[in-house]
Image (cartoon, rainbow, N blue to C red; front, side, top):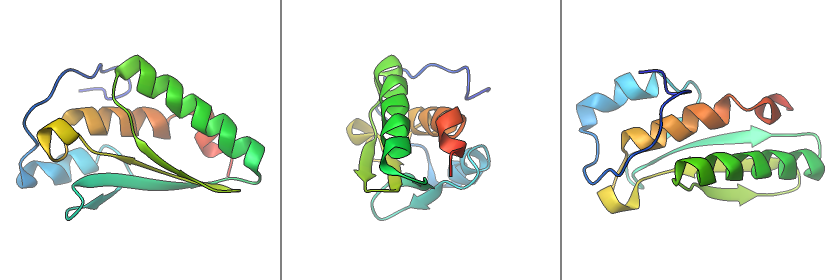
Length: 110
């Protein structure tokens, strides 16, 4: 599956733990937090303007996919995390959005 072209669909069941390594291999740098049932990546930038441009680009993906991340924003850092709350864990939607966020031109501003 090409995650960059994939569309999110309603997901009610989390991926099995043994499936996660294969999915994680498709989103380099994203780290799982098994306790919190999420994947996250910290993006660093030179200034707040770049952070906000990145956040707005992430918002476009989230809106288009109808799958919304948690964002932690500071002057030069944005940490993005994905989890599917309705599935109480990780689904393919989280990996689709993670891949698309990582591919943003704004993501390489650091």
